[in-house]
Image (tube, rainbow, N blue to C red):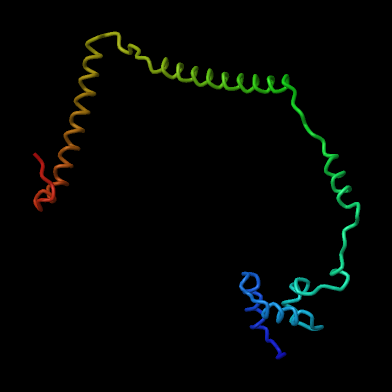
Length: 164
């Protein structure tokens, strides 16, 4: 068998880990890793391809199954009584009701705080303030409308937008 170089080993290992090697390639890997001296970079893979004679003849004792079953059967089983299940269900129900009630109270408080209050005792002063606020809003809207018309004018000239 010819000597195999580091690059060939890397390719074979990559193919091996991707499950693409054939029997001949796996034999090449096994032969390489059974050598006494191999590239130190590949030393970590040596155990994958070499078995000692003692590893080939591992046998399970006759009482293995009983020991395994005995260790499994000693695991405690947790059982919930109907009383405990009902207590858990009641606790969850109380938590949900408390959460719903808290959310409802928060919404009610917010609604109550938004209630309109009279801030002016003199109706004429209230009228003047409302008129001034509406005039300010109207002039602001007019400015916004004028700015929109000015910004849309070039598009109108190109025929992209038609405004009535």
